Amino acid sequence: MKELLRRLDAHTEARRSQFGEDFAPFARLHNLTGWEGWFSPYPLETYEAVLTHVAPRDVVLEIGAGDLRLALRMAQRAARVYAVEVNPVVVGSALETIGLHMPRHLNVVCANALDFSFPPGITVAVLLMRHCRHFGTYFDRLQAVGCRRLLTNARWKSGLEVIDLQAPRLPLEQVIQTYDGWYACRCGAVGYVGLGDRAGDPPLEVSACPDCSSSAPYEMEISTG
Image (tube, rainbow, N blue to C red; front, side):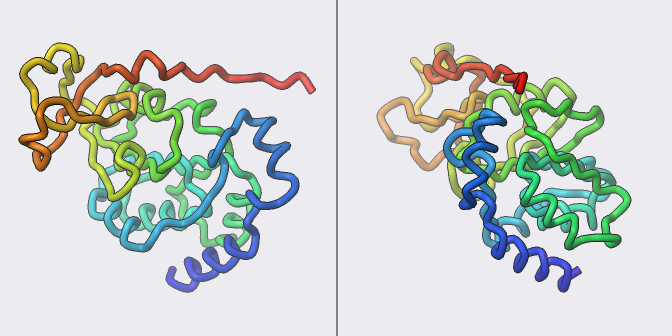
């Protein structure tokens, strides 16, 4: 496994497809903006932090799986791993490198995760995507299929957050008059309300905040050629 991961790293660096001349037309075709569709690996410490929250009975969905370096590691621990990646050059190169060493319970899907039907039975989702623009959509869809936990850096843009997707949440407006501290919303927004006396406390999970109204739902675009 160590040698396989080393080769994955080397091949990914050699084929930085997001910097190629063909990436811009690909991004337009798939309605990708900004950093969407780009892949840059995270430090090993980030992947190790994710692995501490993956158990043998878990069914994992990784959104934005890149070159599958984390998916392979999770497949050594979990019952099943679904790895979804939009960039065919990145994931294609990874599959070529992995070859016949592909684990049976690792299912790789080359698709935009927004267009992919999340399978039932998912217990854990992984979203390592600091530039994510569709956090609320992923949150709602994962919650709808019964997923229990989301491991992500998308809300706070650093570290690793473990979100209980099934925990009860109140709209921010119901607690704003009495609450003092950080909040984190299902739409992906974070903020602070109050006087700043409790800045060190864990954030309050809320279901609606001022940013929710500006989060437009994703609409799939179909190209007719």
